[in-house]
Amino acid sequence: MVVLVTGSSRGIGAATIKEFASHGYDVVINYKNSLEDALRVQDSIREYKVRSLVLKCDISKEEDVNDMIDSIIEEFGSIDVVINNAGIAIDTTFEDKTIANFRRTLDVNLIGTFNVSKIVGKIMFENHKGTIINISSTNGIDTTYPESLDYDASKAGVISLTHNLAKQFSPYVRVNCICPGWVKTSMNDNLSMEFIQQETNKILLKRFANPEEIAQAIYNISICSYINDSIIRVDGGEKS
Ligand SMILES: NC(=O)c1ccc[n+]([C@@H]2O[C@H](COP(=O)([O-])OP(=O)(O)OC[C@H]3O[C@@H](n4cnc5c(N)ncnc54)[C@H](OP(=O)(O)O)[C@@H]3O)[C@@H](O)[C@H]2O)c1
Image 1: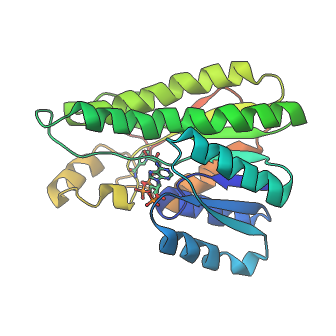
Image 2: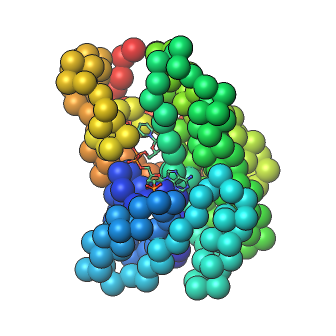
């Protein structure tokens, strides 16, 4: 079995690569800028003795995505699981939002997810098997802070996209969406201690998730053969 995890040079993506490798999957590690990090992830799974491929690809670029999928098919012959995880959040105040930043956020988080799903969904449909998991966010469901309106819109779009992809590739490909709450990754490096405390207080488990806990949810949803077209919160019980 072969899994592609987009944006897997660190954070949730890197933890997801380790989770699947620990279950014997061959893995494709994708990065855009961080080659050294991606190679470290590859190094970290040597103990599982699975095959692995590290591929540079900006998922917002259709040509890049086509090349990446061609390389995967050439190397492994098939692709069984895709986790659309790569994402960005451009941190600004409401006043400082620019059209350029808004577009870049949509291009990566939403169009990038579409670019990958369009091509792998077709391959999986023709093979009569496969599963896609899109990583949205609780921000795609709840609208808490106008400062993240661009990110929230992109993640709401990913939820909508999930439903349409599930219809398009029915009955052979299961498409689901996971919405994490707060996770301890570099995406949140800029948060103040005061803000972290304020957000932690809203979570019933009283802590942010570790990336490994999101990876565990992703893996388990991927193997549940009757979960399809579902939007699943993994947020420790978040009360906004
Ligand atoms: N952390 C949270 O609290 C949280 C909560 C809810 C949802 N999420 C979602 O979970 C996903 C992973 O987040 P994270 O916290 O693990 O983020 P992260 O630590 O910032 O890692 C992001 C990953 O995406 C890659 N990436 C960024 N732009 C890319 C592009 N255009 N093409 C290919 N790869 C690209 C990065 O690789 P390079 O460095 O090589 O570009 C990196 O591997 C994102 O979709 C995020 O929105 C995160």
